[in-house]
Amino acid sequence: MKISIVIPCFNEEQMIPLFFQAMEEIKHKNNYNFEYLFVNDGSKDDTLNKMRQLAEAHEDVRYLSFSRNFGKEAALYAGLQNATGDFVTVMDVDMQDPPELLPQMVDILNSDKDIDCVGTRRSTRKGEPPIRSFFSKKFYKLINKISDTEMVDGARDFRLMTRQMVDAILELTEYNRFSKGIFSWVGFNTHYLAYENVERVAGETSWSFWQLLSYSIDGIVNFSDTPLNLSVFSGILSCILSVVALIFIIVRALIFGDPTSGWPSLVAIILFIGGIQLLSLGVIGKYIGKIFLETKKRPIYIVKETETSKKK
Image (tube, rainbow, N blue to C red):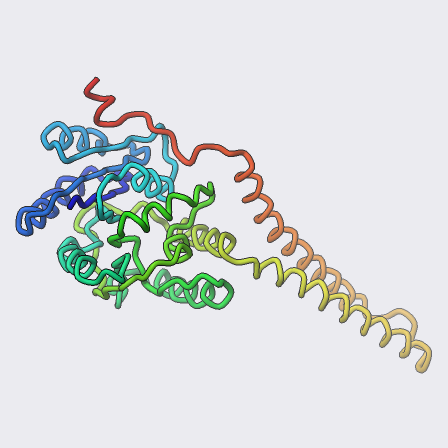
């Protein structure tokens, strides 16, 4: 049985040899048949050369190199699309996805025919910046309340899937991708293994706080229309409050003869309603922007080089 390992990489020249060595130990110890599939997502360092060297020295190493940086979601999709194994796993090259969990995942998937996927989730976020941990927890609480697709708190992309599940994921060819949601949306029985957070062995993460925040917003937009509903509700509430305020002003003027007063409060109300309108337009614009990108039918990624094209 062949196990395909999809490894998205962006500026990971230091980690590729360390990751490959760790996986080779797992492979020989358990007598696995691996297919390594590295995906170079437009790296600016020596990542591509590291992939070339491994592919030249090992027949079970393949790689895809993009023409530019298309993002991790595109790299994941490209890897899954080109994987040929009976089982397929997605792993980060930074070693924060513990390789030693893979044998246990294989055993679970082999022993229980009702399970289609073995995923991993972090039980702790030790070593992670507190602000990132705080917003991550809040994101999972929020998305599970406003979306029909349940997402497990702390779940990683690191998971071992059957060929049937991978084929189902590949049927979702949308341009705006959020893999954590897609993995859940396609269904299939998933068993999660919990582990304590592991810090990077070398190098630096390419994900900043603002990139993660933007990624979270994309996840909400892709799997929930609640922001649109909130815009509608805020508009209805503003109209109701405006009518009530108008009636109050008219009644007060008729009874007390109080003409025009309260300019500061009036300006504050106008600014408040204007802010709601701009916020609603921004939310609607976000959804329209997603629709616009989908209708263009642009490719999710463009491959510039593979191990076979390099040999030619």
